[in-house]
Image (cartoon, rainbow, N blue to C red; front, side, top):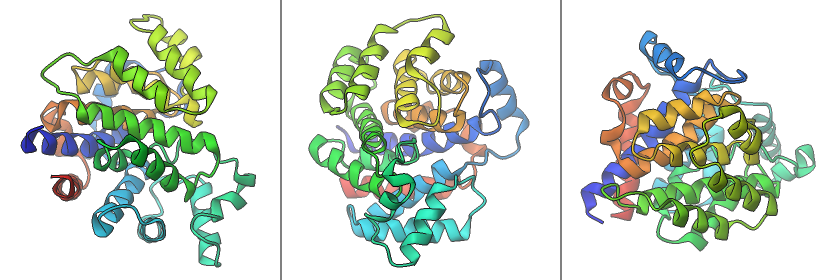
Length: 308
């Protein structure tokens, strides 16, 4: 792949994460959302402000860049430092509690096991994992390992870790795919299915394939989910991307229109679409309004240089 094409994909995925996240803010919890409402909301806002989804994605990118790869202790401390600087990003109760346990001496890879009995299977590790998918896009076994390890910091349950691996690999496959030729949808899903170990995620990937072209949005939500659990949000994001592979705008607005955990599903779908289509596909008016757009672009550039 040409260097400039790969660079565009790295930028597209990180900016796409933040844009999808920011567009979904304020619509969480709705049973469904009119896609026109997403556009109207974006137009009304002076700044597209992101949440903890993007804030933690930034932490992963910063750590991968500084350590030239994964370092669990370093990534954890980066999360903690970023949280201390900007605790207002909409963090749920889990991550701060993990951080406090680590401050009291728990190991970075053990603290989450103490929280909820290790039953942290929400999408908090999947929402932030795009930089892992980008950096390890050509090495699925290593990608899976790093996705699991990065999840263990806050989400120790197998379903949480599996959700992070599924999202990271979807970003990786989108990165590897050439945007000038049709996306090989069946092959894309087959590879995701093969990487999954847990039967729940294998079943959800199969359902994505069966729902191809489904016009009834309520059926999509019933089959794939739209909640905070990893298995009820990552599949919805993947479906949104595969439904509109040639349009970042349609991918993200459709993902948000599913309702539920709108900012996270939007962020994950945006990460995939941006990784496939590149930065040029993200509407300029959304990029201009995005909070900290220049810094996120800088991180994407630095991450790309490691790979390039």
